[in-house]
Amino acid sequence: MTDIEKQAVSESWEPRIVAFLCRWCSYAGADLAGVSRLSYPPTTRVILVPCSSRISSYHIIKALMEGADGVLVSGCHPGDCHYLTGNLLARRKFIVLKRLLNYLGVEDARVQFSWISASEGEEFATLIREITEKVRNVGPFRGFLSGDEENK
Image (spheres, rainbow, N blue to C red):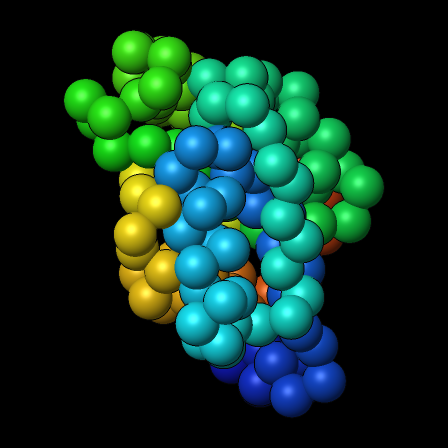
């Protein structure tokens, strides 16, 4: 996408972000952001999950296929997981998924993984704003392998 096309898209388009948040830390951090009246883009849809390790590659790919422009998976900080090592398992799965998504032509900015604790409401709001801006810069998600199809 050219710079002119990106500018035209960014003026009228708001990225849709799906955020899978663990119940114990990240969701509580998002709740704190809301209670503290911290602003972040309203086009983010939060999905509460028991643990970040419960998110499979299927959930992330399905979110993109169903119209999300970006996906965030967020869990407890390492060492603070309520299920001991769930967040470490999630991180391993995420690394493998990122390689697959890169192979399929999905830009790195579209799918993010982070650690947010229950006391980090400001960090959550900042993270959502940053992810939204990164996704806005790469434009709407046009599907898998869309970059390769343009070059053929």
